[in-house]
Image (cartoon, rainbow, N blue to C red; front, side):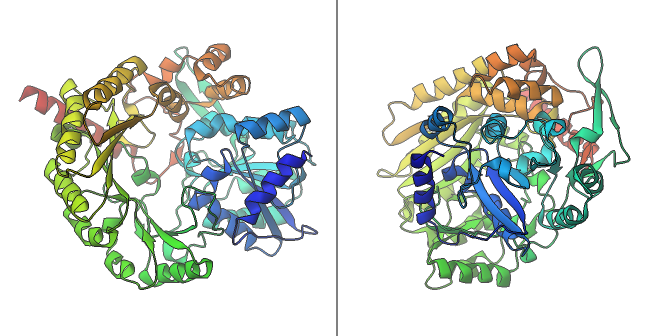
Length: 550
């Protein structure tokens, strides 16, 4: 074990408050693994919540491991030091269970790298009785786990407050690994990928899917109905995260607005709001950490008790984003003195916002921006996407125009326009729509940057469209895309890895889908009929035609 790596881990631990240390003797040992950096993983409320949930069981010891920083990864490789847990410094292969938390498509390649560096075989059939059981949860498991499914023993589809408890009950009484997986496969929301086979036709499309064992053919996404009772909460406060020394408190789960591009409103359907008494209990716990409170929810202005919560004395609250609606007015007075606040217009024209069902007008955006500037907010961050379905050149110009109109509202305030490339997500009405070609998206981003380059007080940030292409491949891929992940253990270039794997990215990214096509994620029942999503897609198509005809 490399001393420098151990010292760095100890340095991270020394800055934490709330870390759990347990003696492992006679207990189920689990390592919660985040396939990205400590900084990113510890900023994730779900990851923190599962850490606390598992350590809440008397017979479970849960520790944490993260993807090493690039310079530390080199030390691991040079010294032969395996990836180890923060708390006890044990290598990954020394645990009973490895539980990955997978929240972003860009993290998929890191899963295999961490297994390799942890001394854990990649595939379930390669693991013996002395290897860890490898499981995963997180948002990406909710909507399409197929690209990485073959590497896991079990996957948790949906919110895991209840299903984890049921899984542990099965684990305690199972007669070996095979017995465990067969019994766990009948827990609602638990998926054993090796028990299913996918067939493809001559054109490469999914021809069928069958169960190889006596297990459910369709799997239901698990929903935790009463978020006021959820044990998921911040476990550790540290300055080593994006939310430095902040206690994150969940206000609501799911979103009522159903924007057509957004997967959150579908995979966390139905929207649920935390009872104010439960939220106040979270805030009382935050006081024990002497931390600021970051309120977490996709649409905080829709929480009916928000003003009551924000009026609590002796608590410093953090709200980083607002929905540009009149209801946000009640929040703005509590944001005075903040350095920056974010608004997400998503599109630059009324036409495009109607197509994506954003349900905010340009007047809403300008009025909200004006009130924020008047409240002393120094910087407004505006989030946009290019490459949206049915986008026209004037929609790209609309982004430039809207940014300039917002900047004109304040002589001293600044605007940061953050531009990303649209990626169609499973279980949204746009799941049938192709992505825009990388070259075209890159051209639109370049045009926006050039048009705003000399505007004082305006800065443009953007993602790289080529990485959006990788995200599209992993978001829309089937099991065959797992071969790309294998090749990416040797290269960071996903396009080259696709060639080596014999996978055509355009088949997944640029090809439109028909309603009759079997999609890789169709075996998951999220509680929203596929027909309803298709009708919503047709509505967007009709809106685009109506505007063009007019």
